Every structure is written in structure tokens, then in C-alpha cells.
Image (cartoon, rainbow over all chains, first blue to last red; front, side):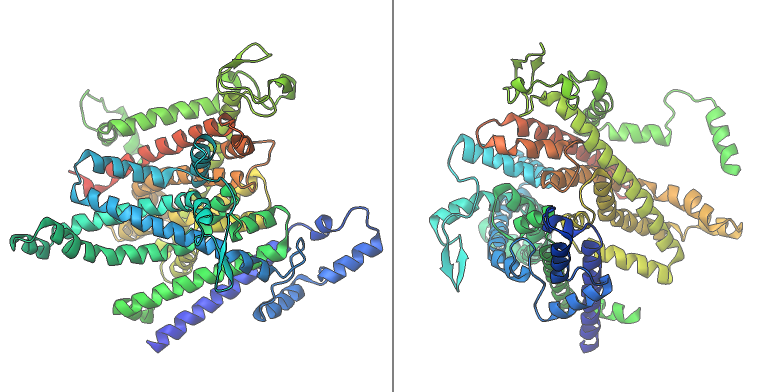
Amino acid sequence: MTVYLLRRLMQALLVVLAMSVIVFVGVYAIGDPVEILISPDADQIERERAVRALGLDRPLWEQYVVFLGNALRGDLGNSFVFNEPALKLILQRMPATLELAFGAMFLAIIIGLPLGLYAGLRPNSPVSKTIMAGSILGFSLPTFWVGLMLIMVFAVQLGWLPSTGRGDTASLFGLHWSFLTLDGLSHMAMPALNLALFKISLVIRLTRAGVRETMLMDYVKFARAKGLSPARVTFVHVFKNILIPVVTVVGLELGSTIAFSVVTESVFAWPGMGKLIIDSINVLDRPVIVAYLIIIVLMFITINLIVDVTYSLLDPRVRLESKGT
Amino acid sequence: MSDATLNGAASAAPRQEGVETPFRRFVSEFAESRIALGGLVVFVAIALIAIFAPWIAPQNPYDLAQLDIMDGRMEPGTVGGAGFTYWLGTDDQGRDMMSGIMYGLRISLSVGAGSALIACIVGASLGLLAAYAGGRTDSVIMRLVDLQLSFPSILVALMILAFLGKGIMNVVIALVIVEWAYYARTVRGTALVERRREYIEAAQCLALPTRRILFRHLLPNCLPPLIVVATMQVARAIALEATLSFLGLGVPITEPSLGLLIANGYEYMLSGKYWISFYPGIALLITIVSINLVGDQLRDVLNPRLKK
């Protein structure tokens, strides 16, 4: 097990290193930040001074080594635009994104589970067919367009919910959170639902498949034969057993929810990391782009590592297989 | 050589009405689902509109001489200065939205289908190679596939466009890099089963060149799942391109796809002028859903496990 863990950890580190090279070269080998950052009226001496101050005159590999050294010390460079540490900018906006992502996951479970359960228990009823058709729409509708439609209906036509921003925030553990105030919650409702749409469809499908499979199991038949009430069979015998895989998959989707929040945040002007990266790409604020990509890649690799290790704990075959190759 | 003579003989043979050929069986099985058939009809109609847009659109939305700024932001159904009705309204430049959507469909469909086709060629070739060569080649290619698939598509596309900048070609490159792995994985899975079959062994015994075995013997037998994946991926590519263009990272303003049209209308939507965003969105929606319906039915028809 230790060997497997170490091997897996080494692989993850290699991937991080490879990704950092790709990101750095990709971002720094294209375009010319001098053109964007320094006003065209500046004379030659001013330009050179600025280039030197930003370290752009050195060869690319040297810039990378300096970047890597600094990155290990938690310094991912200063934003060209805000003139603040890129890491700080991203971390400042991270709570907003995390809040949105967790809100979306929460909605996915409380909406998706009951609908999926119903569709699984009565697969042939018209309501179930509607639910399943709706879940296909949830998979195929582009997120940003649904977001626009939500704004159109609930903010513009009905005027029930605010269309953009985070609203009032309350502070907890020194960070600002929207979900602690009523105004914040009303701002969060639409973006969270928008981000959750895809996950709701996923949970519905998983739950339905799980219920239909479990209903055929011998222990469910036996519980029924014992004369237990249908409610008890459904909620104790069936529900408990499908909950674990559903929650696991939803947990795995956390990373992709955070990545897809880029779209939702742009639609609803939600001040999170996703909005920051889109703005930064548009003005070529490279330290922020690099820092965002590095952080999100690290996050994904960590999530994947945790998943793999958990699986290998649960299923020894995974461990043995990787030893063989 | 033998292929050619066989095909020639088959097509020369007199065909009687009602004889069940694999193709006819495929068509009749596909037509069993009315919804899928409807999806196919709608999709063909959309494709025709996109192809013939310059001839059937009421105006060329990118010919400035035809635009009248006085007609800007007109409601659907109003008659403009040029003398024809703007059935879907106009945008802030006085462009007819219906013409804009027809031209936008051209860009969306060509980017979506083009990138799916290139990704299919790249992915299928690598997948075939991985399955056929095995060993180190296989594990290197599949590692790449795993790595790629462990990141969400939007993140990979975002990363590549952050490197390359805007532009239609760059969007196509990003979409190809996002999608090739799906094709590679699908083809490899099928090819691993197929390559153990006797006909491959026979081809090897004939000492045919590897390229010929891969593309003339192995590939045709991996086609059914590949077609299903390709159909679905076209829809995904169109949706992803629209998303990227909406975020301002996709196609340039001079060649707006549906996503960019929707983005253009976004600021006016808050003041109640919904049509600038709404109708391009509906066009996008119909396109994606119709392709998905066709893909869903293709999967059922082409899946041997579901055969009665």
C-alpha cells in the first residue's frame, strides 16, 4: 500500500510539473505583454525600464526557473493590471466560487434525488417520462443560455430576484459569505440553480438507475414479502443503498463544478475566480492566468489522487493491477 | 483488389424489392422512433438553411451598405426602412436577426462539424494505433487520454484559448484537443476486441502493410460506435464553441456564431429587449437537441447488445 501511495504521489507531482511547464510556456510564448501594458507614447528608455522591472528581457527558461522557485514559496507573480500578488487576487475570490459550487451541489442533491427516486419507482408513469425528458434537456442545454433565460424570466419579467452580483455578505472565519444573509441568498439562487442544472440531470439519472437495479434485489423482495410497508422498503432498504454511490459521484463532480462556474459567474457577474480568469484572459494579465491555471490544476490532481487512493482502499484489484504493469 | 471485385459483384446483382440489406434494416430500425426521425428532419433543415443562407436570408447582415442604423433594436414583426419585415427583430446595429441567425448557423455548424471531423481523424488513428501496437505505444496514448479526460472540457478549452488567443482557427484547435480523447478511447475499446478476430490474423498472414490492416480491415469494423460518438461530439462541439464565444474567447466579432450573437444581446436583455439574445439561443437549442436525438437513436440501433 505504501509503495502504491508513493508511486501515485510521484505521478501526481510529475503531472503538476509537466502542467506548470505547459501553462508557463503556453502563456508566455504568445503575445507580447509590453504592447499591452506600456502606453504607446512611452519612449524607448521607459519601455526598457518597464521590461526589466517585469523580468521580460530574460530568456524563457530562466523566467520559468525564477517562476518555479517563486511558486514554491507561494509567490506566483504580481498581476499586471491590479499590481497585487496574483495568488492573493485568486484566493480573495475563491470563497465566492466555492460558495456557489457547494450551493449548486446542494441543489443537485435535494432536487435530483427525489425526482430520480420517483422516476425509478414508477418508470412508466407520464411524470417520470417528463422528468427523464427534462434531464436530457439539462444535459444538452448550454449553461450560459439557460442562465440568460433565468435572468430574463425571474429578474427582468417577474422582478423576483436580482440579476447580478453577490449582494450583502456576512463574515465568518474572516471571510465574506453570501449564504448567511437573506439578500445574499436571493442573489445566489439563480447562479446556483444554473450551475446545478447539469448535476441535477446527472443525479436524476444515477438515482433512477440505482433504484431500478436495487428494486430487483433479493433483499428488497424479501423485505416486501415480510410485509413491510412500501415506504419503509423504499426509504430504508432501497434509498440507503443507492445513496452512497450517488453522493460519491456528486463529490467527484466538485472539480468540474468549480471549472464550469467560469460560465455561470460570467453570466451573473458573480465576483469569483471564474470571472477573474475570463477578465484576465481578455486583457492578457498573464500572472493571473498562470496562477489560476496552476491552482485549478493542483486542485484537480489532488481530487483525482484522493479518489484513486480511496478506490484502491476499497478495491484491492486496482492496486494489484498497477503493480503488474 | 478482392474488395473491389466483391463490391462490384454486389452492386451488379439485381436487387429485388423487399430484400433486406443491412442498410435497409438500419434505416427501418432508425425510423422506428418518430422523435429521432423528427430530429433528423429538423437537423437536415437547419443544415440546409446554414448552407444556403446567402441566398435565402432577407439581407446580408455583414454588408454595411444594407444596414440602416435607424432600424436598430426594432421589435419582432416591425417593417423596417428597407421595406421588409424583421420577423425576429433587429440588433443594435439594425441587423435583421433572422439573417444574423442564418449566417451564425453557418459558422456554428462549420466550426462544430469541422472540429469534430478533425478530432475524429486524429483520435481514431491514435486509438487504432494504440489497440494494434499495444505495449508502450498503447500505454503512452492511453495515459494522455486519461490525463485529458480527467480535466473538464471547458477548462482545457479555456487553457488553450488563453495560450492562442481568439480566432476561428484557434477555437477549432481547442475543440480538437478537447475532443480527440473521446474518439481515441472509443476506437481503442472496439479495436481491442476486433483485432483478435480471425480476419485480422488472415490479413497479417498475407503480410499486408500495417497501414492497410489498420484502415481497411480494422477501422471499418470499429465504425458503429465511432459514428455514435461523432454525432454526440458534434453537438458538444457546437455547444462548447457557443459557450467560448459567449465568454468572448471564441470567434471574432466579424464572424459571429450563435454564441456571439447571444452575447451581443446580453446587455439589452436587462432592459427588456429580449429578442436579440433569445432567438439565436432558440436556434442553438434546436440544433443541439436535434443532433442529440439523432445520436441517441443511432446508439440504440448500432448497439449490438440491444439487438432483438
